[in-house]
Image (cartoon, rainbow over all chains, first blue to last red):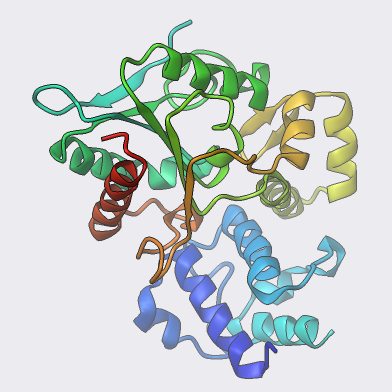
Length: 88
Length: 222
């Protein structure tokens, strides 16, 4: 049910909720937009919140062994990881 | 020890008392301002609104490591017993895990959440912080530590009893209950409890107060 564009929309809404980005900033995220280390709001607690919300909203389970720093480097990386998980 | 309770009261005799049970841990800070705005709106509508400090939280002098969900439930029961007139318990997120033992006239819950989800996020924050510091921890190693003693998670020192109870806690059935989610058919607003930096939402506060006031009328408590 969760297709590729839905994953994108879900992920943008989730980042807007956790980071308080507002709709405009969330919509303006590109594949190259930096996340962890670039957005000051994106600390280790925010990363944890994003992971748990991804599980809830995308209906996936994330093993913490799968998580490395690269996933949160850019929006494109996070989107690719999410799509991969949703596709199973 | 008596904990501080923020009380916002109307002029004259209140229609009923609304006991706000805040979300747990950091989520309480992220939502406090909006909840207090909702309390002001409730007082303006004739209700007495209470926001207690849970033992070990906010201005409490009790160390967090000495409390567990059971103790929070006892504290809320005590506040309801000591209050004259009908009390509606209004809990938000993890507050719904500790609101069922109070002898309230009615319950209202906003976006209730299971304890396992809250614990998972706290443990992940610890794992992320450890990783940044060059140390290695995992959900398994943290769970192992939690079984035998206190565990520090995102600034919260939690006892073995607390992590064990939190890991399996689910909102319990109570009646009469109105449980609302965020959204068009619930309370319009954003999940401020997830926000990395505390925000406020006046429109959401007004919506919370209006929904609680309507529910109070439906159950005949005011």
